[in-house]
Each structure stands twice: as C-alpha cells, then as structure tokens.
Image (cartoon, rainbow, N blue to C red; front, side, top):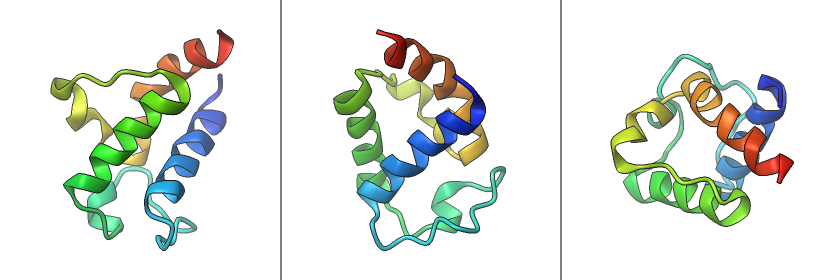
Length: 86
C-alpha cells in the first residue's frame, strides 16, 4: 500500500469522526488536533474506527505516533497494508 492510499483511508476515517472538519488544507507535519476541532474523544473514535474497519490495533503507548497526518501515514501504512491484503 502506498502512502497516498494510506492517507486516503486516514482522511476517510477522520471525515467520519469529524464530519464538519475541513480536510482540504491539512498540513501533513502539523498536529491534527492543532488543525482540526478535535478533542480526546474524537481521537479515540479514530482509533476505534481503525479497529472496526481494518482490525488495526493501536496500543495506547503508540498514540503519540498518530499526532499528525504524516506520522499517521508512517505508522499506519504498514498496518493498513497488512489489513487490506487479508
């Protein structure tokens, strides 16, 4: 799975959790919570949606790796590739 496909999956999940969020101008390196009106519950909803849709588990210790869009792609890309291939 390429970075673009992983990015699209992540953005789709964010759009589900925060449907009013404007995702058109997201900066990859800036924390998502600084760019979007998201709280900790929204973040947990993203983690739950990853588990529900793709059976991807994110340990609590790894949550900081989901801070920005770029870090999400780096961390989740390999996990999503495995999940999609199954």
